[in-house]
Length: 326
Image (cartoon, rainbow, N blue to C red; front, side, top):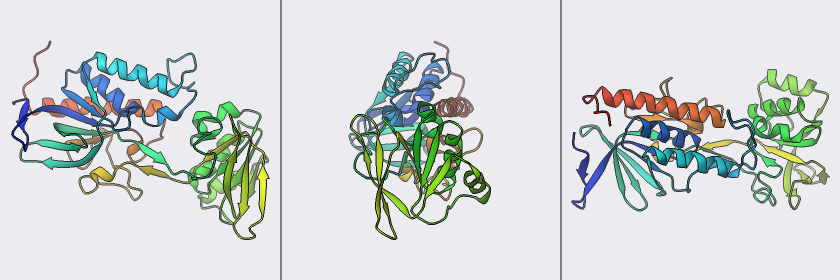
């Protein structure tokens, strides 16, 4: 098969074996394995690479990393390792994906050009729904967190708040109650939305209390979180809560708009995949936080990306004669 194809402008264009959308841990791990597998691979990431890793100040739970490392530093190491094996990255923002089943190719239209590949790996991640209150963005990674299992250990013996009342918020509050001194759950309604079994665990915990009918109006602190300003939505009464950390769980938004209508999504718009990370379309795979059922950890995203590429390589090898070893 030729490794070039004509564009609409009549110019020749490289036909990639795989295009990876997203330069977080899933995308970069996939890029590393794709390069080692001699797959012609292009990574597109309009955000400059790294995804949510760029917001993490300290990482201590990545296997093999004995010393704490910052998210941006880990990103840089992954990118260098990926490029070492020949995988290219371009910081273009993917805007549209189309599938030409007859040509067995997928076209990604970016802000600066078009890219064609035989397969597509969606590793575009997800974003946490933010409170959008003063102090949240400034103190992200310095007391504001969206992952209790990632950051809870940094608050051992301290008082923290959890914002939200769904399954994730209450589960994380229970988890934090085993690590920190005290947890205050702040919920805008007068009862939790989490499953009853999860609620029972939280309500029975001696070091979890609740602020009902309440919302956070601002997160206080200069270099680190020192407290919250709270408003009761029924009485309009305002109060302050002294905490050193606030964990926000008011929803996760997957970055899947670009593949709506091409692959099956679950009710929350995450991509549905099988154990091989294959979507409902045989040439489109998904890995990391963007897929349904992800536990949203760096290590699991790396595993997803690796799994996806190994199965992409098997898919491609079934269509063409084995590649010559270089």
